[in-house]
Image (cartoon, rainbow, N blue to C red; front, side, top):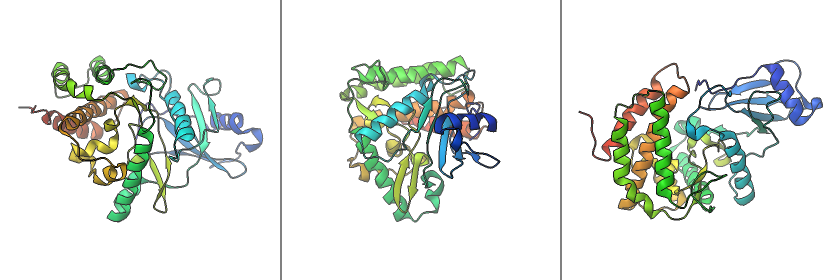
Length: 328
């Protein structure tokens, strides 16, 4: 996916970054040692072959002059913190961090290196797999997501704080940040911004049922899962994590919106029963929040075609319809 948030670097800068991370003796020479990985939507990442043949990945944050959405600020620091939490407190396979550099001396943004994961992206290969194999992998995703959610926080909100004891305040604040981002850039939602605010406010009572902060990955969908030989070998892209309600996880989206796929294999692996009436309301709010992001981010990322915007606008209408609102 093309985006102005992708902070591409020259071969010379990449070579200097490799030298700082692994030593000059392992810095690559010649040509053909770096290739951009194209599946990401926000950061740029390069697969790099070191001089000794080892393969690594460098992930680079957006350029400092590019405006990002409020919730995306400081995303790389969130990812580094999340990787440490997952490596030290779960069995979920995530890459180690070989080297992280926030100095901005060689590059104008933060970056970090990690080993290359030898596997297939589940989001790419899922349609080619037999249904039983695909379901098995999604069950594994559900089990991994439950393990992540088993970690408790002291308060709701960002990993590094400040936290809040009220999930309602935190989540409605998240929605308001997104709406303010959209208003600032004049993004057409197809709905009045205050109409969306009234929908959220009318159903915010369902959020009070959530009283225990849990570690939430939030972006654990097939495109961030690496698989090999029928097993998950890596989970990537952790920059959107926070302490919140596990029901906001991507795998539950399909319980309310068919566009996100059949949720049963994920829920079976997670061990989650059918959603209660109040849980369904919460999940609908989370779908609405997600669709607002997917519409508004297209402007912040400078998309040159309207494919995502058009798709997300339709899904936003579907999310509003879950609350009885249809456009005339």
